[in-house]
Amino acid sequence: MKQECQILSVAPKPFVKWAGGKRQILPIITGHIPNRFEQYFEPFLGGGAVFFNLVSQDRKAKWIVSDLNYDLVLSYITIRDRTKELISSLESHAQSYFKSPSKYYYKVRESNPKGQIDKVSRLIFLNKTCFNGLYRVNSKGKFNVPLGRYVNPNIVNKENLLAVGRILQSKDISIKCQDFEDALKHAGEDDFVYLDPPYQPISTTANFTSYTDENFDYQDQKRLYAEFKSLDRKGVKVLLSNSKSREILSLFKEFTKGIVEINANRFINSVSQKRTGHTELLIKNY
Image (cartoon, rainbow, N blue to C red; front, side, top):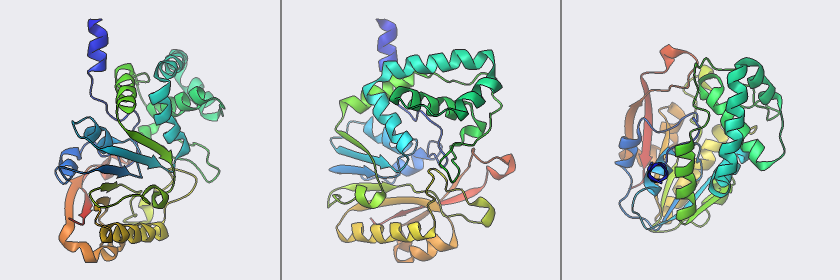
């Protein structure tokens, strides 16, 4: 009984590593988040570091989170509704992986399971064992990241999965797979929106937008700016993360007073020397 209480008391955190994850700069981001809001919207959920941090606090709010990656959204729903089944499936993956890591990894990577539990456990397993925890799919939507160099990857983080499942069950949370424009249709005054889209590349070699088989390009960034403006007119408080690129600075020049520059490392870069010294932007309208 004592051990179970300890498991349930663990604060939930991201259950997958996601490109652009915000765990390392969380204190900076949360320092810019309003103290009060009626509804919280996050339409580029990813690993959910900001969301998990806020929803774990004693805030009375409705939470509307979404992502365009179907398998990722299915993962959240599965952890909420079928946590123990998922843990059991991951334990089976772990047992087979440690017998023959390379052979088993590529076997799972080539697989295409149809069942909910199998699909989600495959995603989490690959995320925990692939190179740098990088989620990337090709133009056909096929996961194509090679095996990572791990001695003892934490494939089954039981304590965190239980904590995530508990928080998703205990709060008023809506989880959907949809485009950000659809996700934000009902945001209004007294609400707060956090936007963390795939970043605008700062160079031709930094173009990583393949979280799904539909790339997020500069036209989407312009759509996002238009949405930012629309929300601002409605009195919604909006906070956006993006790269310090000429395109983003030009798009959001009207909100220059709300731009904050922050330094961040990008641990997911395949070249270790390029993981440090990045400047990112926080852009807010309040």
